[in-house]
Amino acid sequence: MSHWPIVSHMPGLYVVMGVCGSGKSLIGALLARALGMEFVEGDAYHSPENVARMSAGIPLTDEDRQAWLAAIATRLDDGRRAGLGLVVSCSALKRSYRDVLRAGRADVQFVYLEGTRALLEQRLAGRRGHFMPSSLLDSQFAILEPPTPDEHVWVSNIGEPPEVIVARLVARSLSQ
Image (cartoon, rainbow, N blue to C red):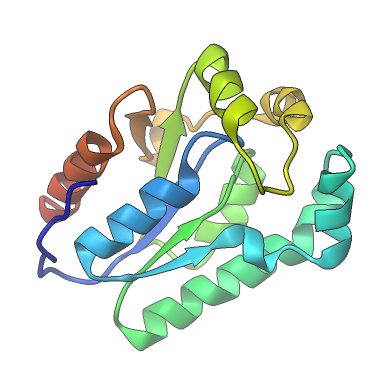
């Protein structure tokens, strides 16, 4: 993996989003390191009940996600108050989920990791030690509402190497 020098700029709030297997945790952690910010794994905010559901291959409902999204929104607020910036991974599959995270937080920048189903299936087939089974990919695609232009989301193709994705994201953050 490449190591980037930590850049100096105004701290921001970033949500790295996408379906399972898109690389949210990897890209989020690398982006946070490159920007000199803390990285928060959004999956850590799921309730034990939600983790058990997903582990059993049961897709979460909008109701199941409410407390999880509220906890991530609170963590974004904590990051803003600290003034240090924050990068969070969160699937944020529906616009309504993104609206919860951006409500009262105009400074949140979403990064959508977009990829083909074939690439995602390949990645999930090789993934070990994660509670989210590859069988849930279909349910994630079924509810996915790709960001629309009015949301001003940065889109990254996950077919690119992680270092290239992060370098582009860092450059974009510096141009803001």
